[in-house]
Length: 287
Image 1 (cartoon, rainbow, N blue to C red):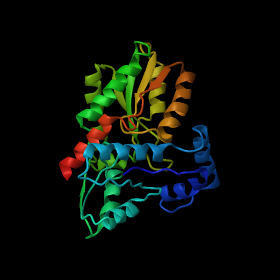
Image 2: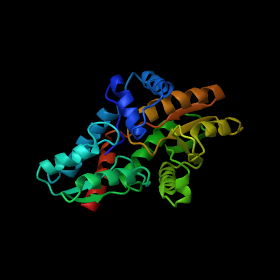
Image 3: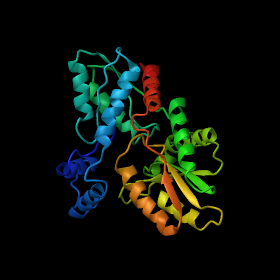
């Protein structure tokens, strides 16, 4: 399962309405989202990338498994994917989200919808997280090392994930701690001593979201005498999509240039075989 994306510019309003739980966006909100899609070519490559990941995971799992792709906010929806599994005559299913870290507000919602759709038609098991999978950590570390080789010696690495409402921290949600664990493990593998965790792509809602935001971190680093560059490793994301191609490659990169910082981000995992091995191993552990 993955978040979903509008397939064409004509689908943006329906997609945004679904993300907003049925509340249509204002004209200003819709124009702002479309502007960001336009900046990366009109649409996000998320659906194409996720299809490639699904094929790669299927190959890693082998013939014993049938793999169905499902999206949270766009076709093919989770409920339709579950029905296809049932129509195939299958009676057991394992759900896994192409996001490594667990939160009740993210992975938990995927699970709720999948279980509701499955009902008593399937024996359903959910993979809660796979943030500590060695192949995933190795792939990230390799990308960090590769990117750092092109940046100044005095570069700080910032590991990011999608921000969530700050109330999850008080609720004991493991999401922030799992991201920090991943960051520490990748930094150790890559031999990085100077690093930190930040958050990005917070929702446009009145309630506070987890911080610091990546743009705030750039502000902090720009005034330090011993930092010349910033490398962002978006460890919470597994493929190219709007939050990578716009929020980092356009918005954060532009702000870093304004601040006089050298800036780069690690290449997305997409369908790297190690990512697929990590996801497949998590499925096998729960099958």
